[in-house]
Each structure stands twice: as C-alpha cells, then as structure tokens.
Image (cartoon, rainbow, N blue to C red):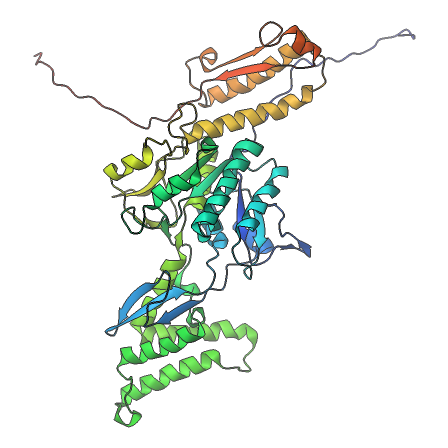
Length: 512
C-alpha cells in the first residue's frame, strides 16, 4: 500500500458447496426412423431429450410393421388363431425394432431427461457392432447414469451376450459412474419351456466381470403402448392381404360358392369384401389429406363385417406390445429418484401401461431368481391380486456381495462419488496444506450432512452416518505431499432396504 487511505479486503468464509449430480439419466441405444435436427445429422451422436415429443421431433415415429398371415406354420415365432374352423398363423415379417415402443414405455413410467444414440435407421439390420460402437460413443458424455439397449435381445444369443458384456465393461471399467440395465434373452418364455431355461442361459452368458454395475429383470412385459387402432389392412404383407380375403370369405361362408348360388345377403357381403380390398389399394384422385380418413372408414367396415379381422388386429397389437422390461425400469428409477431419492430401492412399485408379466412367478419360484449360489440375482416382476404388476426385486447381478448386493447402494455410491469428485476439482493445484484440507473436509461434511438429513445415510447422528478423514499422518505421508498427492478418505453408511421382514409371534401366559 503506497497511498494513504482505507482498503477493503474480502475473504471467503465458506467452502465451495457440493452439487448433487443427476441420478436417473439413461442413455438408450437403438434404431430410429430418422436422426435429424434441422438438417444436422444426429446419427451415432448422443443427443439429450426430455420428452416423447422431442424424441419424435428428432428421431421420428415407430416403424411400419408388416405381418404375414397364412394357413401353414412359418419358421420362427408365430401366433395361431382358429377362425371359421381353419387355423391361421400370424407372424411379424418386418424387422422388430423396439426403441420407439421402449421410449414410450419409459416416459409413461416416469422417465425424464435421457440420451438417445441412433445407431441405424429402419432400413438397417441389427448388428452387434453398431450397438457396441454406440456404447463407446457415451465415453465422452458425463451425465448419463444408465445404459439401456432394448434391441439387444433381437440379436442372436451370442451377439446379445457380446453387447451386454460390452455394456457392463463400459459401466464398470471405463466409466464407473453408471449402471447397465439388461434384459434376459427370450425372457418372455417360462423357465420350463424347451429348449432351455432363459434365466440360466442369461447367467451362463453374462460372465462374472463388473456384475455390481449391472442389473436384470425377468420376465418380459405385456404392455399397452401400441393400440389396435394404429393397425389396419396395411399392416399385412401382400400375401397376408390375399390370405385375409380368403379368411373373410371363409368366415362369411361364401368360399368356393358360385355367385348364382349365393343368397342376396351373401352376395352383398362378397361384393363388400371385394370393394373394401379394391378401394384400399386403388390409386385414386382423392387428396392425400383425405386418405387416412377413407382408410379409417374402410378399416371400420372390415371390423364390423368380420370378428376374425378384429382378432387379427388384436393379435398384432399383442405381438408389438411384448417388450423387454429395461426401458420401463429406467422410467421407474427416474420416478423413485424424483419422489424419494436415489437411496430408496426401486422396488414394490407398480408399472404403468403394463397389462401383465408374460410369466406368472410364484413365491417359491422367485427364490432361485433372488438368491442363487452363483450370486447372479435376477429381479422379478410379479402380478399381485388387487395390486397390479409390481417390481419385486432390487438387486444387482452381484447378489453374493455384501457391499454391492443392492441396486440402491450402488447407485447412491455413484451419486456421492461423482458429486464430490466434481466439487473437489476446484481444489486441484491449490496448496497442499492444512487450510486446503480443512476446507475440503468441511465441504464434504456439509454435503453428507444434507444427504443424511434427507434419509440417504443410516445413523442416529451425523457421526454415525459418515466420517471424513484428510491430513498429514492421517491419510497422507510426507512422500505423498512431496509428490503432490492429497488423499481424502470418506466413510459412509448407506441405508439398505428391508428386503425380508420377519414378524415373530409367540403365546404368553394369561395375566388377568
């Protein structure tokens, strides 16, 4: 100071605060109709959205589905229907892209901000290399806390295992700040169905690496995200439409009957069938805006004319509504985190837009899912009378680990680690002295006290819930300081769910 006068000096009295990071931001990887933002391609680029409207704006609508219909059983999965005494087989001819339907299920179950990685369009076949490359694209994104790949189950069994293994490696080795929500391959089948138990196959293929960073649910879900009203005559392939005409005539009893022998009502019905099919496919001069209205009227004519056609539409919707549960669970995580906190186990929660699980699981049947000698716990989704469909498990795949058995413990620890890590970056290159140590200890202590008050840590007092250690002779040696290392040790008592509640009853002697 060289000039006489009064000088003001301000000093910071409080340390920096720790900001809690987001905990339920999934990254979905899959195929979309488009990937465009006003001319800028979003293909193979993680893109953040917050609603289904944004998804449709950037990535388009659902795929155009095509079903085959015939009287001969096809290769692969098919549904059989008996109509007018004849058995018909319905199978999906188009590639079963799942991301669009999974996104609807995610948002309907409480989902919020998420990332979309479009690895292909609806003209691209499923390729494990695309999904693995999509996982690698997330390395540069810090916000996602979950990796979800619903379409992985549409690969072959071996390719699905490769993709799921890559997701676990990404979460547990590369990033260590997110979890992989996996689906059981062929999880719509019962464990007793031939040729093999889908749960056991999943356990065999998932391996033993990074299991505490993954979780899985069984069985798949019968949902209601796709309405029968979105399906019509166009949902059938060319051969399927031809078969449908035969089905309609069989149902009306006019197959192979000469027109001269038909009753007036039967002739009228036959002409009506021919007219509907002709008008549907005809090139008319009707304005394009009116085509949906006309097709809706024709579709309604078919529905009123034929109960069998209505059954076909219903079965198509059932096929499209069969979805793996990972997207719904990502939405449940977001909902539970918003209402209770990440430390609340995401279980004993009902699922929205879910009609039923594909397999009914009893209390005894869940025992092997929840507790197994190999430790690979699979969370059950069960239906309870009067309660609906509930999530009935909250374990990671590392079910034998006392540290990381529970999903909320792993996710809470990720939140604490990331929040403290980002806040402590402000002290990199600060003097490695007692003042810095005290500031960091106070900052972390204040943050953990807030978490304890909200119920995230177990303990009657803060001292029972956490401890923070830092200092020379406590966490550091003189050599550490000379090498520029500042070591902080944080101990936390994370709350664990009351998974098993035991109530003991015993008779006592009469006292009065």
